[in-house]
Image 1 (cartoon, rainbow, N blue to C red):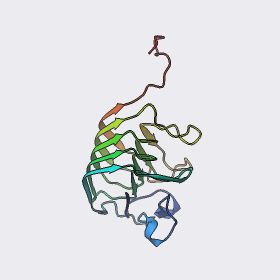
Image 2 (image 1 turned 45 degrees about the vertical axis):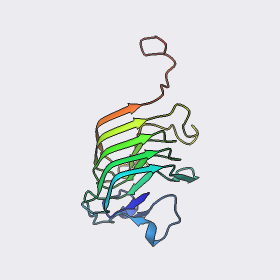
Image 3 (image 1 turned 135 degrees about the horizontal axis):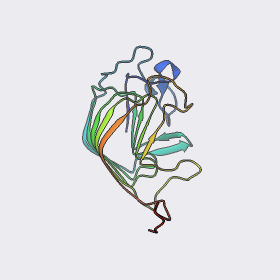
Length: 183
């Protein structure tokens, strides 16, 4: 599922085309130089997304739920993404606040924020499968990934997401514990 809005986005003068789809007028998002922070892209509530996502090429994917500059007038609540072929949830800019998100056994990152996303995500659950991860040469498949933008520069708005009340359950990557013990 791809939601596109007119809120803030921190590259290309605030307008871009969502990745993973051929660029055209219907794939454009962002409010440009006058973003609409409370833009309303509708309601997504009590939804389960399964077996979504598609990788066209590295760094050019569709996620379980892709949000491009979605504004705070949008409602996203009680949404689960399972078995996605990329990230579970990815925010490209925007200001939407989300609650009750579940990421279950997805391939890549669970919560991925970038391009100036300034929202609040509360009540998140991540369950990782130790046998599922992206190719390490492409991504390290994290619970959280957060970037300001692909260039890693100081473009504004800065990505500044607040996550609270989140539980992450997943495989351990350490062969030894910090105190020298083993797992």
